[in-house]
Image (cartoon, rainbow, N blue to C red; front, top):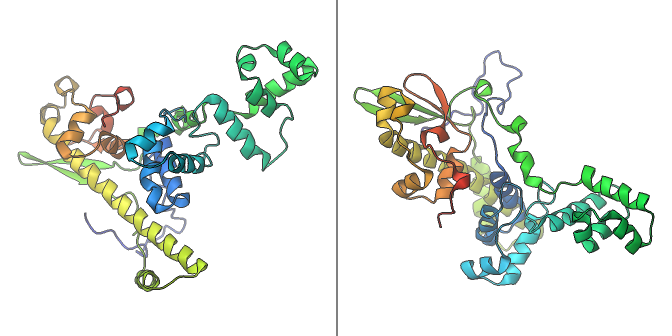
Length: 330
């Protein structure tokens, strides 16, 4: 990987420079949950958290049973349930629930800490779910011995304040990047003689690093019996290092995938005609580069490629497949 420029590099006359203003990458639901989980999940539970996140669908609901996760990972069910409970506190509210009903109850529980909620909403969702789904509002009113008007107010509250599928806001059209707002491509393919060269552009115009003084502090803390505050400081330093390494690994994976795709799509690159594009898949590329299919999917998600003919296109179009429709390649 090419060295990053220093964050103290002179910016000339750009006094209002915003280092994130040029980042055109969209963070999807799973990626957002992974980043959030690193702040609240203990390092020894990262594997469990990542497995659970990988099994959360685009609607934000968990698609795997916790006892199945415990068996696959060789851990106790209690451990899985504990990590899942942490994931269910993340944003968006209601994410990682095992059903729509559980998602709504999670949202209500979190909402209670911020403001007053409708007094009947939780009771209706928890104890009268089937009647709610069947729109049997009069039956709910009779069972609760309250007016139908009160039930209708609760239903309106549920409809307007809660989301049955909290993850969908990550796939809303307004959040998707368009080529018109991309300042620069994530991958550049150049032709040098008879060969194609791949360059992965850096996501930031500044250096992401820990200063030498913090690295020395980390080494010092690692050798001591720590007090609570020191232990928190060491954990934060370790997470910062993990973040930097994760960014570097993601860039390296993107480069490996891009180089593989360039070899497979050489005929298309040579002609520039989409009719000459091979129908390769994400899973095929993953096998060739020795990565998990989901790793490849995350690496190319919402990335753009500048082709030798100077046209810009989404990376996914070079693969000609849709990761969401494939079975999980475990």
